[in-house]
Length: 338
Image 1 (cartoon, helix red, strand yellow):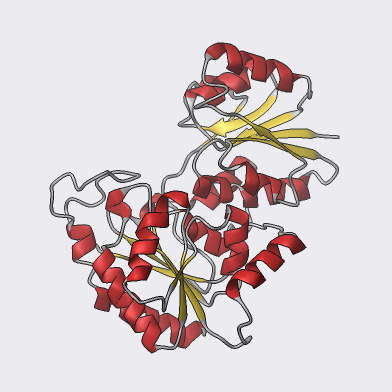
Image 2: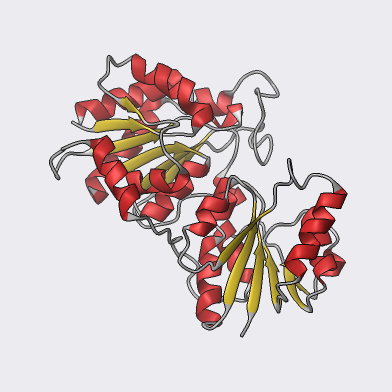
């Protein structure tokens, strides 16, 4: 029996986009056990995958920050006698773990730190979507547009039902995820207000979603509409938010983790690109979804993640993406998919 270790200690979105690779790994090695090294913030995602047997939490900014605690972590997991390692994550710390475990069948990307520690190096192709890049690691050649699978308990479903209330089954729900940890990824708040007005006129009930750090922003945005839209930011975990989105007809999101929540829920997602671009490989990819990206700006993209403020103090990538552009795209999507 194969004992497989997957290492993914990046952001929430990266974790979700690793799930299709894990799903196909389980199909390739049906009698295998698959364990994942994750961070505390992403452990919930992998624990909710029906294809993951165990999650090992690496608290790289806390408990396991020092080299001594990392070595103790490695010493403990070495007892699991892994036969294969697949590492979508490319950091020095990850490569150090791979080297220390000494597993012969190890797979990493060609641009990984300390890439020489991997037995098998796979070309990292920037033009590929992140899901496809991860599937390249396991030499999967078929259609890469595989949706990540997340299971939710009856308790979670009941919690979401209670939050939504006794709404009729035909009530139209729309969700907006206005936040991001990067300021230059955020579509302007006053522009989101115009989008909300459009959705209200289309008789949608609107939910604002986000994490605890987005709560203040979402609450202040909701307050501008006299209780007619609901802020759910900070109220739900990742898995609970995905279950909430399963009740929604469309999600409008920045280039951030909620886009990938929408892929788990398999709903229509419209992703808005301000300082980043779809070419980085993190766009929504189910048939119901789309994105908007302004081309022709010499300053765009200014970075792979974004910044706390626009490096040239114009934020043209956000301000020139006017609300009517977004509204026109929403009208098109709603006519086609809803």
